[in-house]
Amino acid sequence: MSCLARRTGQGTPIYSLQIQPPPAGAQFLAGIFLLTLGLRRKQLTDIEISRQAKLRKISELVKDKFQIEDRHIEPYGHYKAKLSLDYLDSLKNRKDGRLVLVTAISPTPAGEGKTTTTVGLGDALSRIGKEALICLREPSLGPCFGMKGGATGGGYSQVVPMEDINLHFTGDFHAISLAHNLLAALIDNHIHQGNELDFDTRRISWNRVVDLNDRSLSKIVVGLGGTGNGYPREDSFDIVAASEVMAILCLSNSLQDLRNRLGNIIAGHSRSKTPIHAKDLNAHGAMAVLLKDAIKPNLVQTLENNLAFVHGGPFGNIAHGCNSVIATKAALKLADYVVTEAGFGADLGAEKFVDIKCRKSGIRPSLAVMVATIRALKYHGGSDKAVLNQENLETLEKGTVNLERHINNVRNHYGLPCVVAINRFGHDTEAEIRLLKNKLAHYGVRVVLCDHWAKGGKGAQELAHAVVDEINTTPSDFKFIYEDNEPLWEKITKVVKKIYGASELVADTKIRAPDQTVPKRGLWTLPCVYRQNAIFLLHGPTGTRGALSPCRTH
Image (tube, rainbow, N blue to C red; front, side):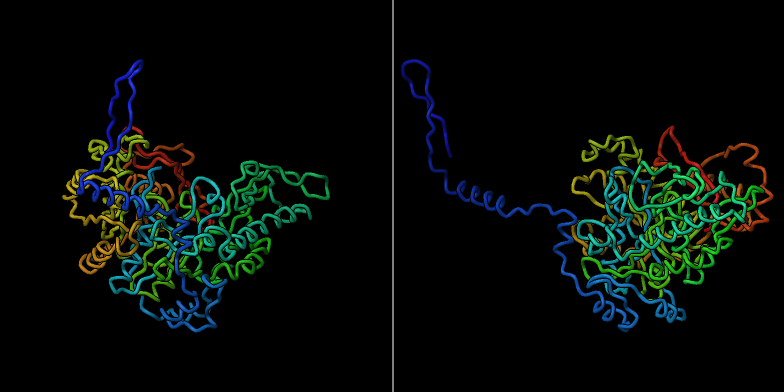
C-alpha cells in the first residue's frame, strides 16, 4: 500500500511518497490480480484462428470418412479436393440423408452469423455421433476485398483453409467468368461477321463479368477503334457471382444437363423481337468445356476436421443464393444429416431455396434453423448500431416482430419444422434472453442459445440435439409458395402477399396483362426470381420494399 505524507516547511507545501508494506491478505490478492493480467489471452481474429488449425490431408480425410478410392479424389494441394463426376453417378441408388436448412431473420449491419451457425451445427452433429456434412457457397473475390468479407464462418466455427477459400480456391469462379465472357465475345464477333441472326444491338441482354468490384466497368462502350474492332455499342460488367452461368451451374445435375441449360440462355433479341439463344450461336458446347472441372464439387474441412462441400456462389439478391445442387445431392447420399444455408433472410433466401432450388432439383429439407442475434433484433426495433451492446428491452421487444414473421413463413408457408438458434454474444443480458424466450413461448418453437463462435461444435451441441429431436418428432409438410403452371403475375402476387405480408400488389396495366409471348416461349413453368434492397420485413412504417422480376433461364 502507498500513501501521501505532507511535510510542512517554508513556501509551498511539499508532498512525498511513502511506501508501506501491505497486509498479507492484500499481497496475496494483488499477486493473483497481476497473474491474471499476465495470463489473459488476446482475442484472436478469425484468420489467426484459422492459421492455427491442425489440418488433415484432405485425401486421407475423405478416405477415412467415406472410403472413397484415390481415383475419385482430385486434390488441389493438401487441403482441397474435388470429387469426380463418375463417383457421384455411382451414388444415385443410395438413400438420402436429412437436409437441414439454415436461414435467418432479415439481415442487418449488426450481423446474424448464418454461415458460422451452419458450420457450428455441422460440427456439433458430428460430436453427438451423427454422420454429418456441411454444404456452403464459395465466396466472391470482389466483396472479400470490400466491406462484406469472406464466407467461411467465424471464430471456432470455420471451414478451412480460410485464405484459399476466400481467394482463388480451385478456380471455379475463373472458369465461370471465362465461359460467360466467351458468349459475350461470340455475340460481338457474330455481329461483326455479318449478323446472320439479325441481332438488334439495342436488345443484347448478355453483358460481361469480372470478379472484382470495379465501378468504372458498370457501364461501358465496346467496339471502339474502327471497323476492325467491331460495332460500337453500350455494354456493362457484373461481378462473377451475378453471372447467369453461375446460377445455371449451381442448378445443374450433370455436365450434359449444364450444357443443355447453357444453350437455353437468351443472349438477346432480333430486330423482329425474336429471342436469340446461346445454342443459336453454337456457344453452349464450348462454354460447357470450360466448366468441365468447375462443375465438380469441392471438399474442404472444418476446424474440427469434419468435411464440408463448398461449391458455387450465386448471389442471393439477384439469383437463388444457394450452393450447387450437385454438391447438396452428393452430401445427402454420403451423410445422415446435411446442413446447408440459403442467402439472406427467410423471406428472400429461404423462399428462393424452396421455390427454385428445391423445385428444380427434387431435394426436400426436413427442418429449418432460424438464426437470430439479440443485437440484430434490437436493430430491427430501432436501436442505433452504436448502442447495440447495451441492454434495451424496449427495442428488443419491437424487433422480435421480425423473427416472429420469419417463423410464421417457415412453418406455415414452407411447411417446415423450425428451431430458433440465438447466436449468443457476451453482452447479451439475462433479462434480454428471458424476454425473447417469453415472446416466442406461444409459438411452441424451440429456442436454443448457441456459443459455437467461441466454442466450436461444443457450443452448438444443444442445438444439434434439438434439431435431431425435432426432425424425429415433427414431420415436414413441405410445400411451394406457387405452382409451376400459374401465370407469372399470380406467382409474384403469392410471394408478396404470403411471404411479405402485403395486402395488395400494384403495377402498370401492361405489366398485369398476360404476355402472350411467355407461354409460347415455354416460360410459364419457370420460377420467379426477384430483387430486393437491404430493408426487408422491418417493423414500422417503412414496410417491405423491393422489385420483383421473372427468372429467364433457371
